[in-house]
Length: 230
Image (cartoon, rainbow, N blue to C red):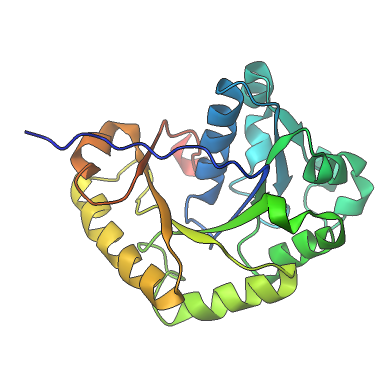
């Protein structure tokens, strides 16, 4: 008999900041979390602060998000590859609005964190959580690199990480064994970082096979594709 799926709940904090190395799945998590938040009846916004990475951008899914009722705040297309978030007042609005539950998709490197750091003086740190998404099947997600990367992100953002999101995946080619073995690696990495695992993010098709791994699950319908997967 398969284990019963224990689903992770939404945080009570109104600002969830999601970061992680390239290819970790952080944008996938951000999209899924924003859609779940608005589906729960909460006024929800997604702030796309990952303007350094041209491949995985939350704003590429703006139409779906807005149809669902999620407010999307991101640089206009002609500014999207520049470090100019100050030119988009809406970003500051959704990051600071006490009536809005905001998910911020932040570049998982010092440059991306520096952009978030520009907004730090305006943030209510009692109402935010910073999550580090770890995908053990990506090059930067190795035991030696992660503490250094997290330290750089925290320093540049001026914030402290609260939890790890386990996201072991190989994109649309992920198999159950990749999730199971990968999550065990993430458990070790999280222990080394001294952070709890908030949940295990997994393709919804594999959720039942990951139900016995000990972490609350966040089943996701995959939306993000690389250009060559289109």
